[in-house]
Amino acid sequence: MLNLLERCFAVLMLLYLTGGLTGFLAGDSLFNVWRLEDNPLLLTIQTAMYGITLGFVVLHWRKFMRALRASGWVLALALLALASTLWSSDPDFTFHRSLVLIATTTFGIYFGSRYELARQVRLLAWTFIILAMLSAACALLLPQYGIDSQLHPGDWQGILGHKSRLGEMMALAILVLWSAKGVLPRAVRIAALPFCAVVMLMSGSRTALLVSLALVLLLPSYRILRARMTTLVPLAIVFLAAGAGVVLLAIRARAHLLASLGREATLTGRTKIWTAVWRAISSHLVLGYGFSGFWAGLHGESARVSAMLGFVARHAHNGFLDLWLELGIAGLALFTAGYFQAAGNGFRLLRVSPDRLACWPLLYLAFLFLCDLVERLVPRQNDIYWAVYVAVVVSAAQAVRKRRQSKAASPVRAGLLLEPLEQQPGHLPRRSPGRLGNLHPQAGRGAA
Image (cartoon, rainbow, N blue to C red):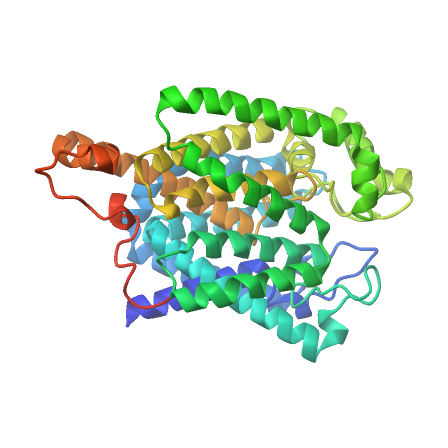
């Protein structure tokens, strides 16, 4: 019973981190950055959610402590955010936001250490299915809230308050559902995949559409990554060369491509924002302006950027520039180191397991990279993208470590895990590919 309640709370917490459950309570203003710290009701909800999380962390403290070793880079980044209170343009705000970032990081470590990859993907799948259903219901039954009538008339925003946010969430939902083969009932996956795709299209988010198409094109490459190194290296060179050629062609034909997508050469004003932000970065290059210490609407340093642009900007529309802006090159270096370590662990996991689920860490990292080019996803407090990133970092590292321990403890068993199935000795029992590497413990039991 306690396990069921814990899984239900995990889904509730993930829904909370999407921002959908509290979106109607925000009371945001176009000319002032809304601050949760000024809303007692939202503060109470936040305190309750993280208080319950802390209770589960204490309940599973051994797993949590073991996971801390795998989360060094993300912890370092969260602690740098807290330390940036000392030089922040708005120290009180930075202090409060960085504490929430640490709390969100704590949930990510708990989620990644408490559940194996199969259970994580299953809980995420149910979270996004519920989110898609609530957003569609809001758009159809409460169009004054669920459909944008100002900036992007007719585009769905669901319970999330913005079309781009809804589109990105549905793009991620499609990846989760694709990865959930074998961990969700087949009928649920078949129904949920097109449903989430339709909701994404109704949002009108071209960024989400392009990211989804790019990731779909990348899916065959995950099979290639499992090839022998003698085959992988030449194929990688060919793919990199082909990718570079496509990028060069896209740059040359960018005017036609953007026109076909209904976009102008400035990417809806993004290039102007990037130019203005770079000027601000250059004066605080190493440590930045402090976590959440720059963007304050028409107040503080961001007022100069808004004056240059002629409109109020809320973020840089580029996650890497935003991170550099707030935590300087130090924060960008910490994030980059953690990202590449996670990618390396994801690559090792993919190499030793033929299971589709093993693709999830690398898929999610690719999704983050592509979205961060034009939006800001990580690091953010109270946000599902950061929590899932932390969980992926922890899960990939722990899965690789378990394989190393298994190889050291039992060379025969390790051979079963690492050798292609067709090359296993005939006298050894064959193992089902869907169960290799303990990616599916108890995956056949129940739903979320």
